[in-house]
Image 1 (cartoon, one colour):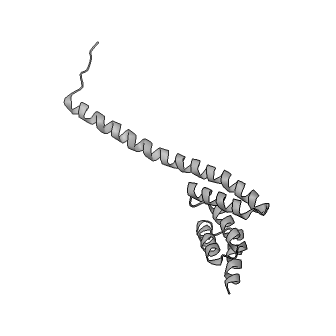
Image 2: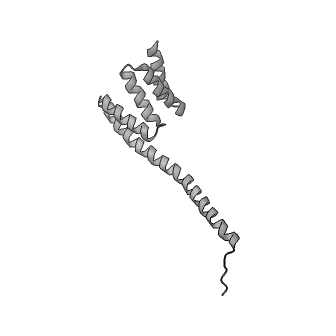
Image 3: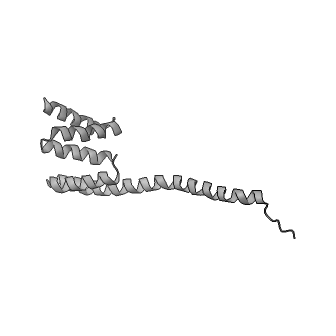
Length: 123
């Protein structure tokens, strides 16, 4: 049985292979982390929508801000944030949240409708 002793050249490539593997793993972990953050934001947003439905706007506002810290492009959180600001007559803030939600989901009829309500209310 022959045992092959690695040459100096092949030993040099070993750290490069390890580096390539680490870079690849880091790239693969980012989407997983993002999905986990989005899932956590989904849960917090669901809690916020229940608070909103119960009329507890302040609690809903706190929860929505937490959801947006976890996942800033969470369309549903932005939508509910826009609704709360609309109810509080904070039309500029409502417009900002709903416009961002619309940019993320331009085919959402609910977002488009509420955006229209805000524009109409500003006149």
